[in-house]
Image (cartoon, rainbow, N blue to C red; front, side):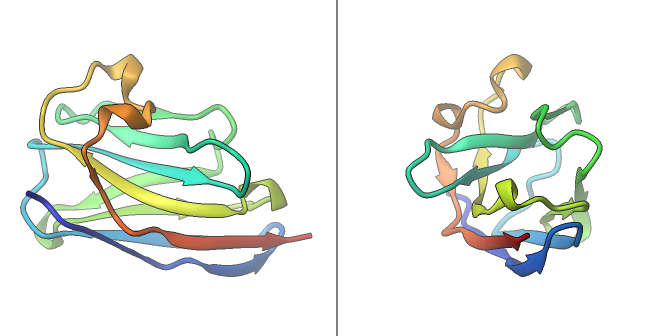
Length: 126
């Protein structure tokens, strides 16, 4: 089974940027659905952005225009570029993968994913 390791979290001021990385233990391009999720204290885990094995991407409305997902297939690494960060973006961010095909309208549903990284903390101060 694929193993996922996130990195790149940290503390930034509002308006700043961070880039998260998710290194996979095996080749994922066009084989897995991949997603970024986040969970703030006291809140449910929510989908941020996901990409299916056909390359279709779906963003949560709250991050559209600010966050960008990308892949480096040679490095088996998924990225999340986060710009114009807001205090409400503060959360633990998780990378997730799913080997089977996920219907695109379910890509941001955490229950659809079986493989998860350990998370990386993002803190945005005002």
